[in-house]
Length: 83
Image (tube, rainbow, N blue to C red; front, side):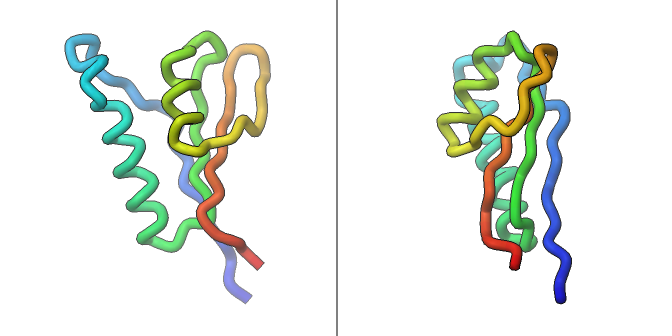
């Protein structure tokens, strides 16, 4: 039996001068690619509940909301089965 692992990203910041230039999307795409290439079964990200930009970014990449505490929202992207 092999244990599946997940990658967790708790902070992703893009400088204000770089916003709107797809920098955040490129970073998320690179994270997902690296996680997949290294055998992760999921990528977990967490962001502030009021950060609509981040919510839209993660959802546009296929992440699904996994938990909402009212202060933060956790998203998960499942990359492969882990039986």
